[in-house]
Length: 306
Image (tube, rainbow, N blue to C red; front, top):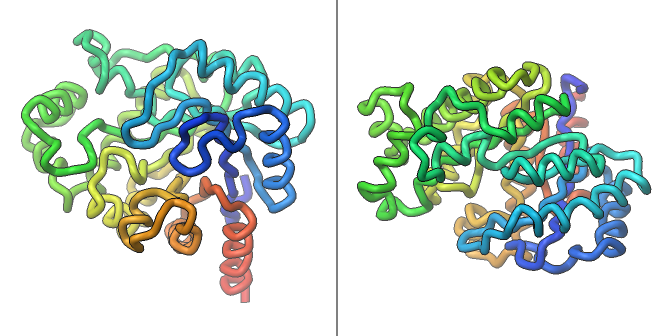
């Protein structure tokens, strides 16, 4: 990986209900045309997702998700010489996608889905290595670990039950530390600690240090203020975690809320986040509009080289 370059990951949602482009690319021919366009525009990686993660999304079975992504990934790999990542938190989907040719695993739960969502107390113990981490380790592929904690997007949603589950899922920290980190102004601390826990799980699974990329999780379980503070303190977060970081802010509600714009009019806001990511030493950005973001990064690179 070039030590100075910011890599661009193009988004390919093969879902009928994605928040931004649902139903547009959920057949193979349309997906391949879009991949070709993104590669021509400068995409370094294609990120394939088969289940929407927008607020209020309908969770689907692993079987349905695998069916959505496997054929598309196989076709992309047979037509184009480009790395492909699979955006999933389900072990069986990851395994099917890797068998179809996926090169990278992008897990929006950072190997901690069971910690926050399982009703089995054993699954929430920090020493447990989840199956999806084992799948990635066995395949010996890079992983992208996003921070997510199920706290919700509104302060009022952080009720006693939610806070209790948060405490149970973070048993290695003191209750005082954890309760402090739930405050909006301490979101950077919460992200750093959570990413470090995901990294520890990856190491326990046998995933090499050089195969780990992290993601602060813009738009996931964060209030608007927390999303903005994450961007404001991005360089601090990158420095404290000490691993290559991906920023995935493209067209998200943080931008829509700040600009009061619908999802199809958020590209200027997205480009600002891309430039901030580069300035904060992030190594990768995940975007919908590849061409405009590539151009913005090239302009920044020209300025910095002058």
